[in-house]
Image (cartoon, rainbow, N blue to C red; front, side, top):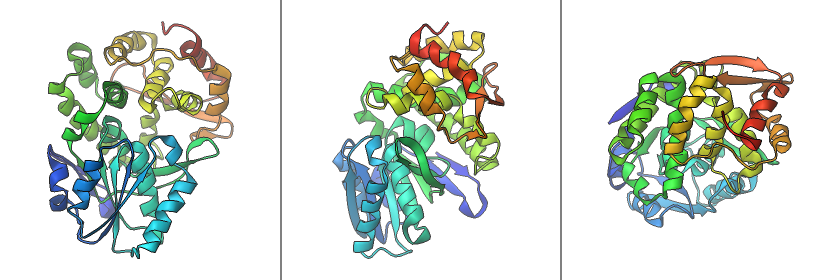
Length: 340
C-alpha cells in the first residue's frame, strides 16, 4: 500500500508493506554513503538488513530512550558523518522508534544544511505518528523537542513485520496515537475501536487509516500554523506528565492520560473503555504541581496562554487558547483521582 504525502517539491510516499525491510534497496536510494541510526533496543538484524543493501553503510546505535535525544548525541552523529566523508549527495536512515526518527531526521536536516533522510519506523507509535510530517528535534534542559526543524523525509517505509518483536505494552502505547486521530477526525474509526477493540487482524487497517488522516493534515498545514495544531490533542498535559514521569510512562501512555481531561464528559465516558482495552492508564502518580510547571514550557504557549485542543464529540475538535490555570482541574483529575 502506498500513501502519498503531497507537499509540492517536498512530496514523498509512505510505503506500507510487509517484508519491506528486506526490499529497502528497491524502494530507497541506498547506492551511496548511508548513516543508519538505530538504538540498542531495536533488533540488530533490522539495521544490518538495511546495511546489506547500502553501497557504503555506517551504523550508529544510540542508547534507547529519550536521553538520546540530546545535543550531545546529535553532535556525535554529525561528527561521525564528517569523519566518514559524507557529502550532500549522501543520506541518513532511521531504523527504530520515534526517538531515533527525531534524532536522525534532525541530524539529516543539520548536516551540510540538509541531506536526504529516510525513515523506517519499527514501533507502532512511530509508524502511526512521529515518522510522518517532518517534525525532527532533540530535547534541551529537560524540555521535550525544544530544538528542532521541520524536515520532510524522502520516503517512509513501514514494515508491519517489525512489530512482531515488540512487547504488548509498547504496542498499546503506540495505538494511543491512533485513538487520538480517530477521536478528533474519524468517528467511524473510533466506533470500530469501541466495538472491535484491537486485534492482529485489524491492526494494519487501523494503522493505515491513521496514516491517511495524518497525511491529510500535514498536506493542509505542513508547518503547524493552523489545522496541524489539532494533532497536539492530548499532548499539552501529556507532555507535562511525560517530562516528570519519562522513567515510568511511555509517550503514548502520557498522551492517553492527556486526552481524558480534554474530552466532553460523554466522550470521556466512551474513551475510558477504549483505553482500558489497550491496558492504558487512566490516572498516574505524578505530582500535579510538577506536571503543571512542566506544562508551562510547552512550545504551544504564546504570551502566557496555551493553545489546546478539546473533543466535544467523536470526529470533531475545538481549538482554543486558555490560561494555564484553566488546566489545573484536568491535571488533578488524572494525577490524583478518578476520570469520571
